[in-house]
Image (cartoon, rainbow, N blue to C red; front, side, top):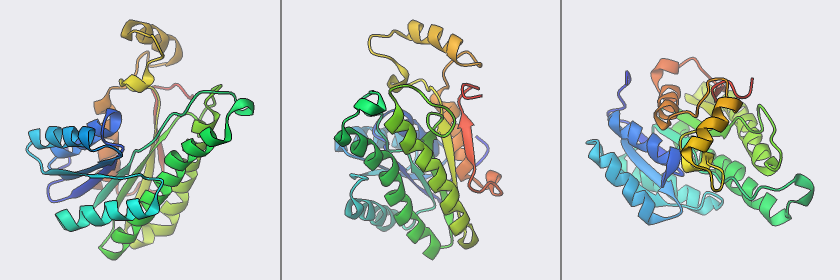
Amino acid sequence: MSTSFAGKVVLVTGAGSGIGRHIAVSFGRAGATVVVAGRSAEPLARTVELVEAEGATGSYVTVDVTNEADVARMVETAVARHGGLHVAVNNAGVLGTPAPLGELAEAEWNAVLATNLTGAWLSMKHEIAHMRANGGGAIVNVASNLGPHMARQNMGAYGVSKAGVVVMTKTAALEYIGEGVRINAVSLGAVDTSMSMKPGETEEDRAARMREAVPAGRVATTEEIAATVRWLASPESSFLVGHDVVVDGGASL
């Protein structure tokens, strides 16, 4: 881990489990003060315990990213507790219920876009407002290879939402880099979490499926994803603006 985040305050949404939790712990290991956000207090508290086990300071705030007042409170709380906000990772998202687009319920469509796209926009909006007024910062939006880079049957709402995150990232990056706010995205393929498992599938089944579907022949480790996010948030990638880094083992090529 080449870059220290000592003295930096990092906010990670969707950090109660999975990739978000691993990203939060990774920043803690790199010396950051980490604020984790999500809907439920109990899993967030567990993430904070893991951050603090790395010798870092952590805290949590509950948030519904589809509610602007909640999102504003999230950012305000992080700043009030820890004195600033230097890095934000907008990871909160849902897969939704798989269905063909012609059969998808309107409520399901709205729910997926509300969390994955509107939630990322609201988070970024309030993070940008603080960063613009306080010397800049770095934002990483978590997208997916589904949507921006490839399509998959029955995953239309999810794909549309993540494609929107990439376009939003590029647009905001152009709008705010002149004020020191650097914004990029990371588009993920299959990662070693429960979200990459099909119902009833074993890890051996998944491994066999990945050998067929992914040129690299496997899923990504959570540390590979966390390392990419840390790099995008670090001065080591300081000339990278509005980029969408695809981390999927070649699956979308």
